Image 1 (cartoon, rainbow, N blue to C red):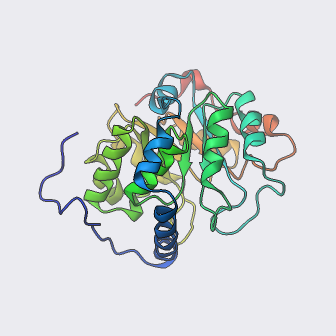
Image 2 (cartoon, rainbow, N blue to C red):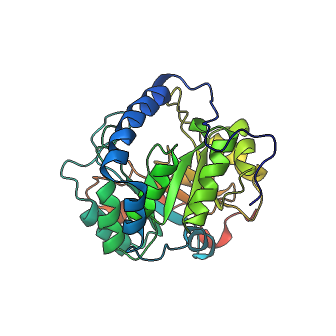
Image 3 (cartoon, helix red, strand yellow):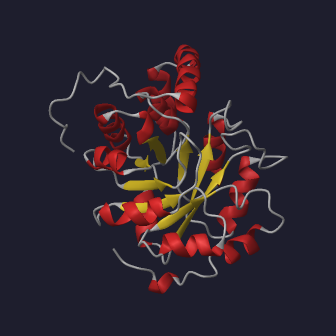
Length: 286
């Protein structure tokens, strides 16, 4: 992947105008990162990486699996502080959803906003045979190496946090580590920036980070603008069969669902209900 021209020094974080909730997140994570870097050095991460299994190809799984793929988010609470699972055991949840046939698992690792831990990635990766994605607020190279050292197959990169160079840089590093970069976008501007980094997977977020408003038309609007060689998933706000049918009609390859499936009495029934209006063999092809 060629480096975009006219970009700054690779070690400089190209600044975006980030405010509100995302600015608070970045400041808190910067402080924690300094502690993490002191506890485990870059060479320490390389040593841990060497004992992990080879990363699974998330994009291939999502592209070629029959029908509309399902990625389930595993987390104790939402980023807004809502408890989703009272007695959260990531391995137990991972086994449950793998046995129900989901294609991948997105594991929340942020302790402050999701009550997650980086070692949850390792536990889930060791106990499952499907791709495992690190779900966190990633904006530093160290976090990408940390994900691979913990056994992740893929990493979510939120375009709203990253300028053009930093996004390209993190996508490149992720791919060099043989993981899959899943770039999350919420509007045309973020999509344009993302396409320059040519990721294998784009996740269209139906939730606005600034207002937390849900708008499923983001998926139907942005999906047709994405080249066909890129795998596209829709994430956030998909709670009903009608929601699922709406985003499926746009021609996406998969969906990411968390709150609608965590902590419910019968997850298998919930999945069947969610997909009840979708005919995977006849979904729109981009």
